[in-house]
Length: 304
Image 1 (cartoon, rainbow, N blue to C red):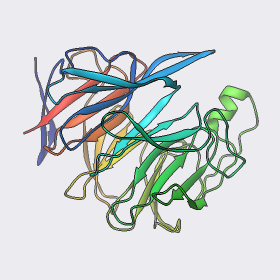
Image 2 (cartoon, rainbow, N blue to C red):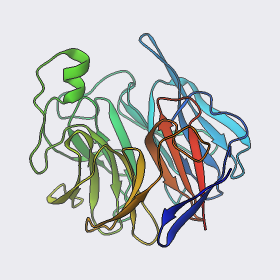
Image 3 (cartoon, one colour):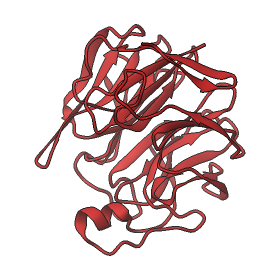
């Protein structure tokens, strides 16, 4: 049964069982292009010695169109699509950011496949890449093994890196090394995602520090506000930030005022079956939510 969710002016109706063909694995993130096509960053296999992924493409009504990246991708993490339909995909385990067109043709690659960068340099398990609507430059959060943010020109020239905190909780848990996380202003402990407004502001989801940090495009610290388990955020056309955080979607002004949240964990079609990890808002205001931990966990909510 479809269900209404949200609050205030942000009300939605769940589109139950939207994708007619199941996502071929775990939906790590989701984004849409100018034609309403839906691109799902998908982790197909994630075994110790077998990491594979694809981008699965659906039309607006949930009909399967194609996949691309087959045989190339290892751990697709976050995906972002600009107004020009440039598709930026971070492949965390492969240490690269790939840019595609809507046909799935590779246009650009930042980083070297399978080769982590030197300390402080791109990339060591990056998490998200976005193109700034303010400057046109590309910003990357980097990431699981490195507490950095990077700024590139559209042509791929590294212009700036900032942040500190050489190790994080991931290193401690996975490798058993002493964790030395960055906790102060401008430091990171697993920068899990990044987004950029049209106001010369860069917002970093500093997940293991349970906060969103705000910088200018020169990497200068401005502000921060609390956000538990912040996985990804997108800014809608009215300038409202929507964050996939914990098991809910949070709405926050760009000054850090939390207005409320919606969504809940559960097994019903309108609920979140997995961990809320990826998020997108299309041109109609509809919301897509990708969830990790459970295969084929991708929900659509139509704005009403």
